Each structure stands twice: as C-alpha cells, then as structure tokens.
Length: 146
Image (cartoon, rainbow, N blue to C red; front, side, top):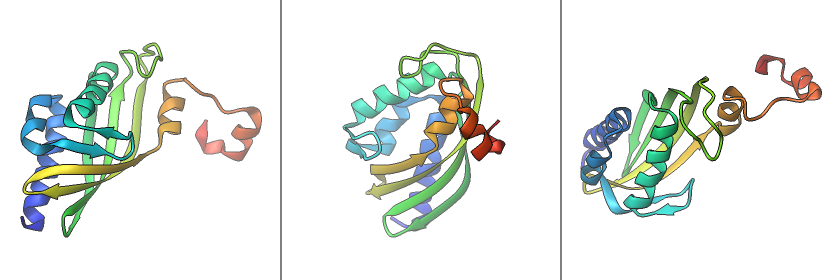
C-alpha cells in the first residue's frame, strides 16, 4: 500500500475512536493486533481496553495534529480530550475534563493495523482527574503544574 493509503487507514481508525465505533476496528485492524504499550494481543483484548476508556470518558476525542508515514509505519501526534464520567482503572468518576497529547506509531500490513506503540502522559491525565497531587516540593519544581 502507498504511504497515503496507510495514512488514510490511520485517519479512519481515529474517526472510529471518536465515534466509539468498535465494529469499524474489525475492518481496520488485524485480529492478532498487538498493543506494545499495554502488552495486549488480539483485537478482542484491545476492544476491551477501548470500552473501558470510552465508558470512563464518554466524550473521548482525538484530534490528529501531525501524521507522518514511512515504509509500513504511520506516526501520529494527537490531542486527546474527554470528561471523566465513568470509572477509570478503579477511580470513581470526577466530572473533570482532561486534555493531553499522545504519540503513536502504527504498523500497517495489507491495509490493516497489525501492531502499535503509544506514548502518552498518564501522569498529567491522572493529575487532571485529581488522582494524584504534587507535593509542596513538586509544586516548587514544576510551578506550571498548578
């Protein structure tokens, strides 16, 4: 597939995330998809993770800020937003809004995403929903965090 076709697959994947339409993943992702960040193998396991995220953040949305393709990989930098309205990794809903960035690398074979790597600032997300707080020393070291 061409680089543009690979980027189109990733754009459609992000659209599926934004619609919370897990059925589209059957078309866009391999059954044996491997998520390196969460160490999940299989599309079913990945859908379970997404279900938890979408339940926790019913207005979850990703906006692609940058997209780059090379060989069989597509890199994206996304802005992620949502409101914490459901349980998230055991944390009760707070109603607080989150905004953060993630960077993902997705490998595509024959038009399907077969594996992915992701880096996101979970510390920032957990701080935004009130799960963690900076100590007094942390506030002095990172004044922009308050």
